[in-house]
Amino acid sequence: MNIQWLVRSQSIVTLASGMIYPYYLLFLKNLGNSFSKYGLAFAVFTISSAAASQWLAPRLDQHAKQWLIVSSLGMAVAMIAFPWVLSYIWVLILQMVMGLCNAMQRMSERTLLADHTLPGQRGQAMGNYHFWTSAASGFAVILGGVLIDWLTIDVLFYLSAALYVGGAWAVGRSTSSVEMK
Image (cartoon, rainbow, N blue to C red):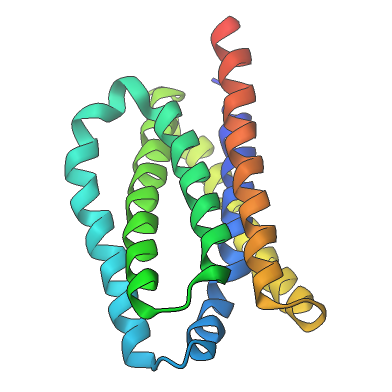
């Protein structure tokens, strides 16, 4: 089955996250926080993602495409909110939201990969998916480094939000065209 729409949309999302993630540390340091607080914030992200996965699991089979769209839009909102954050508690709240969105995105992409491939024929599709999303991640880090030299970190967050919206749009657009076939 053709899953190019999934590869494209998630490459956009990977570009969005990879573009901002390495520079997130700079953002936290600008708030006057320490690397230990960064560690706590990342732990909040991963633990909330783990907890959300338990709630999402029974809902994935019927709603994976919708969760994928919601996850991208939720990450876009978080990226827009970050430049306005003035206290560490809001960083932790946004990290919880991002953890939930991460669980939605990761679990949905895997469900959709399985749904759009046949047993015994998944390797090629998974390899293609991994190649393009990993390449997008590497390109994103380079792009983020170039852009941050010219722009502020706030603008980088906003660009990331725009890419997340683009990823949601790509899934939404493909959802209607895939289901019509």
